[in-house]
Length: 160
Image (cartoon, rainbow, N blue to C red; front, top):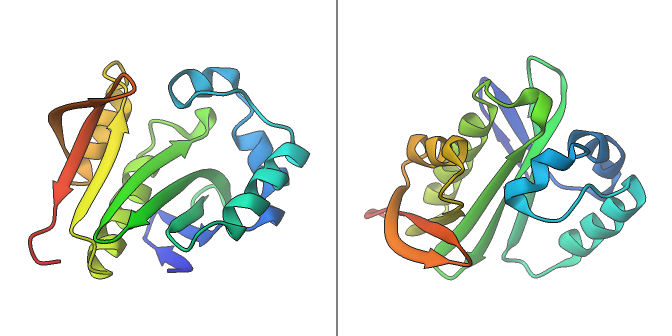
């Protein structure tokens, strides 16, 4: 699962070397309204990426490379536990609204299904319409369950 390719984006396995470019991608404080925290410096992001890369095998992280822009524009992640995965996606503010998150999340869900994952979950703030649209496009549906103020969205893959 090192590289996932689509006509729109390429998901590249996260490496600490991505920190310099990604610090700029994630630098808008407004981007953190729904994802929490605040923008990190390149050095702080590199340290975080080193921890993620060294983390448990169930932690899977990719940066999103836009074919059109020919640059990194965000990230996706999956935390795999047995037959289920919790996913998340973030696209930098200048590249939002172009279908990049949808392309990345849909590709990630497809790859997880190919790997035998039977349940895909995302937690989305009820006011984040753009993420709800991405989740819907990737096949997830909202449930009546909540976690830390966010709605649990879920996809059951029956053939996994």
